[in-house]
Amino acid sequence: MKSIFKVFASFKMFIILILGFTSGLPLGLTAGTLQAWMKTENIDIGTIGLFSLVGLPYTLKFIWSPIMDRYVPPLLGRRRGWIFLTQIGLIITITALGFSDPKVTPQYMAFFAVCVAFFSASQDIAIDAYRIEVLDENELGAGASINVMGYRIAMIVSSALALILSDHIPWSSVYLIMAACMLVGVFASIFGPEPKETEAAPKTLREAVYKPFTEFFSRAGSIEVLIFILIYKLDVAFAMALTTPFMMDLGFTKTDIGAVLKGVGMFSTIGGALMGGALLSKWGIKKSLWIFGIIQALSGFSFFMLAKLGHNYPMMVTAVCVENICSGLATAAFTAFMMNLCDKRYTATQFALLTSFMAFTRTLVQTPSGFIMKSLGWEMYFIVSILISIPGLMLLTRYNKWQGHQLNGR
Image (tube, rainbow, N blue to C red):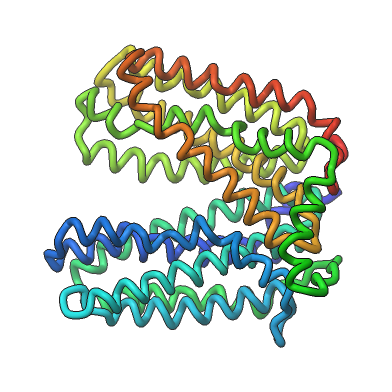
């Protein structure tokens, strides 16, 4: 088995880092940064709110993912070929979005924003599939954490750096610079290593659509696995659902909240993910899910203590650091677990489905969270967030019974 240093220091991980960066970059350009541009141009707030719909391709990407499993582009192979094509599409559409005028032609801006989101979601499908297929078993955790690191760095570039640049240069130039940043992904798609073991693509589109489902649900414990994916990170999603209102109730300013949540929190998540990847390479997926799941659950005590102490800046920073580091640890193991579930014939479709299913967790807990908090108060709210972890950990006792593809009780 490779040493942890060799795993992280390999050229393969450098490519994963770059692809994580290009995966995260477009998101801000169609979300917060785009909203800031429209606000600068005094666009009606109702119109700005409607633009949030441009993000729909990210939640619907499983619909066209079978196409990316079935068809092989004429260059660079099935995975790198699709990555290359989607990145070229992103460079073109981000540039076009930058030269749109929100006042004169808002319809063109909306069209190109949707195009950016579509190519971005499609790139995510291809990159996720590539990462699963190119990494060895002992590299899954490191690959997941390196991907998180690249993604988070990109979000800083496309949000914080883009906003700073907009104070000095036109928005069209800002988006042109962001489009140019995507060129590093073109380099990665061309020079990245090919997966060692490649499975034949589905023979028909019909097979690419229904086979991923029938293959997955033919496994022992497949329903239990889906429930586990839904609830494993339910506790942290619940704890973080009302973070901003919670801190505002304690008297922290929006500047305090922004600096700590977006700055300290983001770097803590990166650190936790990297640490999780390193430990996962030594411990394996099963042990890591147990340890990191327990740590993730107990991290809710940090917000409970903040609720007890009230307006206490050091405790606020500590709570955010602890929560994000522990969440980053669990994310590395959880992502590696889902990567390991995918049949390499249908990697794109199965991983897109699993991540879409996982994303439902956030919606599931955000809807009733405000009512629960009003009934219990902040201190008990965070106690509940800890207790919510129990079902996921209990279901993890069934791990050895899940005899899915490549899942043999590791």
